[in-house]
Length: 201
Image (cartoon, rainbow, N blue to C red; front, side, top):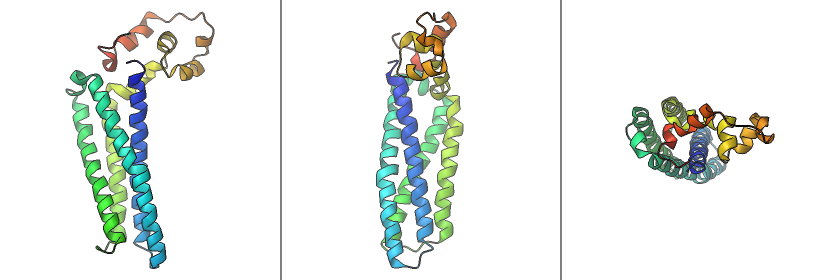
């Protein structure tokens, strides 16, 4: 469990980065497409939009949701009663809806089924940024990312040998000296963290 939870956190963050970046570049390409008069240029931008959606946004969304759901299951009693998570999930649902809107409107505009103004495409960019910032603001209330700082404590990383131990050794060279004894407070910091409650240390 000690190795799994940080790995899920990394996957969750990586997925969100891919998801948001995919939606942003797709919306930006769509904004440019609305200004192009050349049919060849418009088709080239439409192909790029499909690549960005399928190569970045779609897999990023899947990774974010799967890793997030797995994190919740590691300590469902805490997470399901955490108000900050309910707020965050509301923004995630809105982001899923925005994802669908971007995909539908991008395809419809490329095939000529709808007309689209530059201001409409720019609103998609702004909506993506707004939801991304909202998710970031909602997240610090939870234990997940805030407790990553505990993993860099030599009293934890040297003791338990989790996958971040390499980073811990860079930050805390004493881990390499072989004579470092982790403090009791360092051990307790991990043991008492909500994301590790119920874990076997």
